[in-house]
Image (cartoon, rainbow, N blue to C red):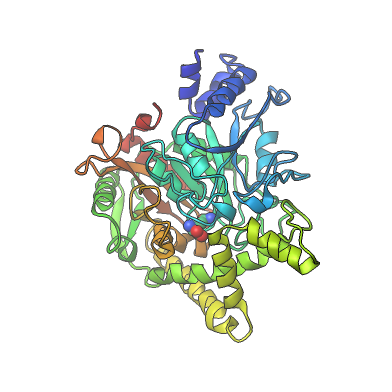
Amino acid sequence: MSASELLELSAVAAVKALAAGELRPSEMFDVYRVHAGADKLNCFTWVAPAQPAAPQPETPLGGVPLAVKDLFCTKDVPSQSGSRILEGYLPPYTATAVKRLQAAGAPLLAKTNQDEFAMGSSNENSAYGPVLNPWDQKRVPGGSSGGSAAAVAAGLAPWALGTDTGGSIRQPAALCGIVGMKPTYGAVSRYGMIAFASSLDQAGPLTRDVSDAALMLRHMVGRDECDATSLAFPHEIALPSAESLAGVRLGVPEELTGEGIEAGVLAAFNASLQQAERLGATIEQVRLPHAPHALSAYYVIAPAEASSNLARFDGVRYGLRVDADDLEGMYTQTRHDGFGAEVKRRIMLGTYALSSGYYDAFYGRAQRVRTKIVEDFRAVYERVDFVVTPTSPTVAFELGAKTGDPLAMYLNDFCTVPMSLAGIPAISIPCGLSGAEQGLGPGGRGLPVGLQLAGPAFSENALLDAAYALEQTIGFDSTPARP
Ligand code: GLN
């Protein structure tokens, strides 16, 4: 098999080729290692310097290399969460999700660039520089799993692991024209993930197609005694095969499909809904009355948890230490030099929200809004199987366009944060292009738009099936991102 044929294989196709002996694992790893090493998009913070120990030939993933977001601890490999404060940090252990994928036969190819501590929607908050979108290098890939999304879209890795706290898998997947899935909260162990907001953080796949997402997820889920919030997944994740959507009821929430969503994004979204109808789905309008308050609740809860999680970076235990005259000076100077502006903003917001006297007014109230959002979804799922929305209100925007306006940046997650607060699974698939009128994107044909499908907790198999059926009819062409 030629290198260019190899690079075109989806992960599922590569597993088959490896099992059939058409391809050797070492050959596949080396082609990707060289390819990733020549990356011009700044997707990676580390690329494997050598072959891993040969994977067992009988492993289910057979040696398909894996790119992993920087915030997963990987034994003796830099794990910096996009932050200066963890520069050069080599963990003594590997995160459970990565360990399981490695055990299933997916060796570590590279660590991917990300927003610092996963705070951001454009990858511009990384201490290691921004990542460029392979569809248009003047534009952001989305975030915070921007390196993972850009690497998969550009074909620099067969697939990648990311994390999603409020949209960080789904939104970059949408902006880069690939598939991204956030599983049910607790489906995948968080052990070894450098924490941002523990009640929201979930690991999940960023892949070229829906089948690859299912395959990766199958080997990640399950109870882990090192994470008390992890759960035994009730059944095996199956590879999707549905060809129709007959009997599937899709709910379109008016709160997430109106104001604030770009016209071109809505047009691509609506065209996909018509395709879903032709596949047999029924579409109804539904209400998520509290969804418009999700961002406000999220920006209290997530910073509150972050302010607590990030207290451990004190210059004593990990990474950077900046010396000063006394202990307190050392703490202060280390955190001053080690954290970027957005991380400091979140620590201050979170500390304020949790301070005595304000705790109930902010944190307590945000938690009550969160419960309302959970109840909204519960009511909707009595009538429909899945909620569908655009993933991101806009296509990929230009580098620097929103860095001066944190609130504009936060609005990127308008459609993804409600599902995070509710802990339910959601997948983004590419559903078309937008911006041809303005001549955006390769050949002026537009930039990718993502469609989000969200289901009740543990509905992953049904969700993957529906996404797969839709993906087959949409037939999105991702080749413009792989020059
Ligand atoms: N963009 C959101 C934030 O900045 C979500 C990030 C994420 O999901 N990790 O918090």
